[in-house]
Amino acid sequence: MKLLKTTLMSTTLILSGAVYAGPGHGTDGHEGMVDMQGMSHDKMSEGTVKKINPDAGKIMIEHGPLYTLNMPAMTMVFLVQDRSLLDQVSVGDKINFIAENIDGKPTVTKLEPAK
Image (cartoon, rainbow, N blue to C red; front, top):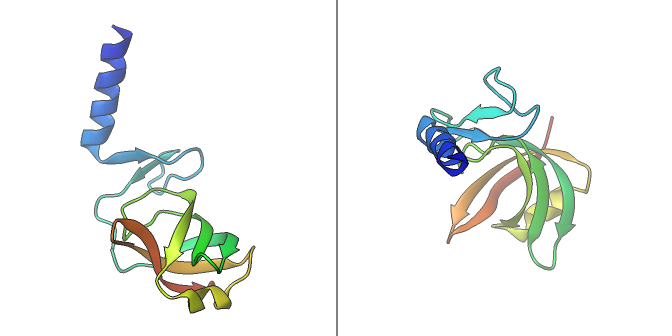
């Protein structure tokens, strides 16, 4: 019975288009929930640089919702399309960026320091 309840709750969340993003990350006034439907795909996301690996062309970003990837807020590592983007930021910087799915990998295609 417990498995059936869990399955039904999971199915309901998936079908509703809601994604759990953790406490404090709600964008629609509902704590912990992000409705990713209807988000603009050309809007930049906000984040904070946590780590930079220029040799591997990677950056770790704690970010808000990723509009272009339909993802909730989290911290994750991205490839960068152009390694020179990494020269524009340092660990701890607040940034605005666009990430896209390139060859199945989340990749930062545009990045700028937050204003």
